[in-house]
Length: 330
Image (cartoon, rainbow, N blue to C red):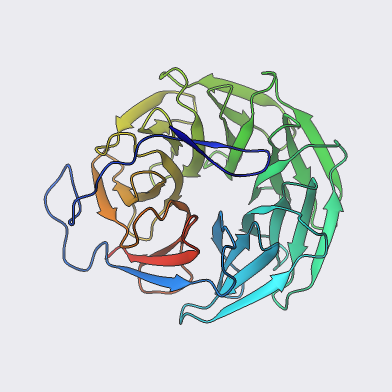
């Protein structure tokens, strides 16, 4: 067993399992183009990217944790990098805001920040000291919502920078990812609390326990079926939760794959990354999983998002190898 380095946050990794040259699937073979991957190397070496999002300018935006930058990548493969004013801020998650800017979390210094399409950065300090904000998403109310990993709060920030915090009922729950649900509420995962949480725009929180003990839920996304889908890092499952809180779990074929981020693809399926399995996975709304190996070994694929192009692609970061990947869904 080894620990991956990250200030204030650890991924628990297990022994690496060898990968087959072709995609493994629980269904019939996929068409040739599905799962085709192209990789782009980030200009700054050792930047340690975490997450990626589709920006309002039709580019891909991502964080560079150790480089202390926000990166931008065009669909043609051109990179631009923007330095963050606060040193060693620890940028982690990024999302497109309702105001035409890209918003991100600064984990190490407990700021929420925004960057314009031209690269101007503005930072807003979180009231709770040492909150360690991790994930951020645009809410149904025109605001941005974020998780406070050690602050144990769900935060809300208006486009003008006014912050409100809501405490999570379960102590030391370690809230991680957050997304807007189909029901007009925000949904989040609690890594240590082993819960899926729901918060209304007015701040009322409800928690639903994950059936697998110690599953360490990591990421959550709205599906095409009116439900929420989430990953379980140590449970090695993909979970589905209805707006009323009913949970179903689907095991990932690769053992100890550590499923991480998840997003809705342009093909109507959910796509996820396998941090240790070194695969990109696809799960249908009925629960059929297919896995596609990443060409670069030990890349630790992490964040994934649907692209801004019309080529049915998804884009993902390779956390350990300083690469942005593109995978075809059609």
